[in-house]
Amino acid sequence: MMFRHDDQAGSMMNWLRTRGLPACVLLLVGLFCLAPVLWQTVTSVKPDQDLVRLPPLFPERVTSVHYDRVLLKSSLPRSLGNSVVVAASATATAIVVGAFCAFALARLPITGKSVILGVALVTSMFPPIAVISPLYLLMRELGLRDTLVAVGLTHAVYSLPLAVWLLTSFFQQLPKELYQAARIDGCTPLQALLTVIFPLARPGLAVAALLVFIYSWNEFMFALTLTASDTTRTAPVAVALFPGLYEIPWGDLAAASLVVTLPVAGLALVFQRHIIAGLTAGSVKG
Amino acid sequence: MNDRSLTKMKKSGGPVHLSERTWGYLFAGPAFALVSLIALAPIAAALWLSLRQQLPIFGIDEFVGIRNYLQLWGDDRFWAACRTTLYFTALSVSAELLLGFGFALLLNRLSDGAGRGLRWAHVMIILPWAIPTVVSAQIWAWLYQPDYGLLNYLLHAAGVTGGRIDWLADPDWAIHAAVVMDVWKTTPFAALLLLAGLKTVPRELYAAARVDGAGAWEQFRRITLPLLMPVVVIVLVFRTMDAVRVFDAVFVLTGGGPGNSTETLSIYAYKTLFQTLQFGYGSALATAMFVLAALLSMLYLALLRRHVQESA
Image (cartoon, rainbow over all chains, first blue to last red; front, side):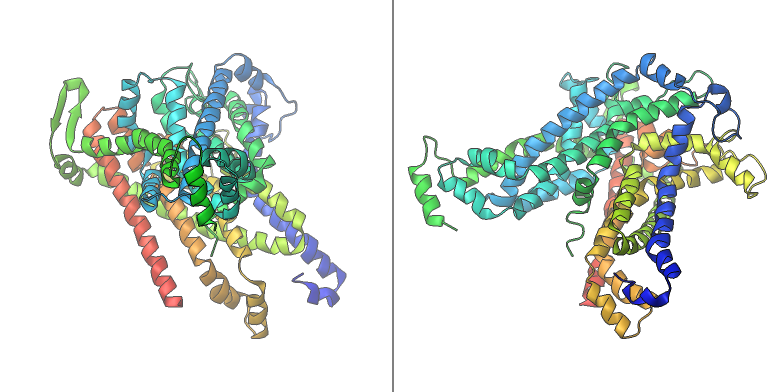
């Protein structure tokens, strides 16, 4: 649209501007974003002897030996399972607990709303390293040391501020009358939320759930310090502490890191529009 | 609003009479309980711990007041970690902002022409953001590998460097290697926010500026930049907060080494807590970090307020 006035400048220039320039921009941005990941992909299918020499950049034959090793002969599948359990339970907890709280903040006449939001802000600003030792002691007291519950619960709580913040603004955008109509029809507030508000808020709930899931799947410091054994390790901890006797097994590590990335990358690609909406919500209201 | 009908309904309501306010507290209760137990109590405990000396291995546990903070003041390693953290933050956040702004401006032009292009750009740009930080640290560790890493190979092939550079083992290079990794991982986030901000700038402003004979640079300086200031500040606050607290990236990439050349405050605190088990001193370190992060974000907010006042 912007270039409409340039139409007479010749079809070559026109093509360059409407097709060529965007293509260059895409190539530039794409190279920046994808090149390291592509190299990791190449590495993951290179035979061992090709890993210790460059050139050639690309292997003459590809191998699945690294994937076989990490998927069949390592504890990575166990860690992936742990991550699924942790991320799913953290997401469910944060969304259920967060949605009720957000609705109270958005629509119900409770006092101290600004205090609650302030607490949420401080919680999310406080460096995780600062709470890690008291948290560790607390989990030990509760008998949850080295359990997936400890990690899931911690992830749920530390993503609550984000969930509450997102959902509060989402509920504020829903028409007030929906809730009032449900109440007048005889619903209790709980029924109104469960039967009217939450179903209508599904897009917002989904965005919050995606962001919490990705946070939990990727989180490292809490997962590292609250777990102590192979059986409770989450996937990022497994990748960080990847076992290597003398040399780092770069091919196996590349395969493992791609396998660990696949679920979140998949979610991010499929739901990118929703995620971007969630990430930018509130920051660009003007 | 139907206040009257609501009141009437409440009076004639079901078996349990609860006011809207009570329901509100019931709804907010679980969140508050969880946050109190898992976040607020540990924060309070950390502040309390920072006033104690705790060395479990020696059975020491006593109240020492502000002695930990006094010790911090005279601790060269703490100041070195502060410098490293601030250097890392300043370098990576400014690079992320500049690069993110560049990407956003380029991509914004893209959306004027072909809508499909922007969708592709979003797909690519969201990948570094979604990747676990730990994974991106391992990806870059392999790129930096001195003997068969891609970076040395490409630089050598292009004739930029003479030979082998051990990026992560050289104290001068290591911190910059960490910065580059962080910039790769988080520029997309900055670009996404700035791009969303660019979309809210009314097109008519640019048209009017063109009529007045303003060039591209003038348009950027007088329209784009002032209108985007709030988004820029948000990006700065978010990114600074994360950069000051940086842990995963540096921990996996260099572990704080070589020497202590990449030891940020988080890593020093982690080592103090979990390797030397000094819970009191480690908590004081972490609290100092929080103060640093809070001061920086207050600075940004003050800047934003001044900017808003000036343009009003």
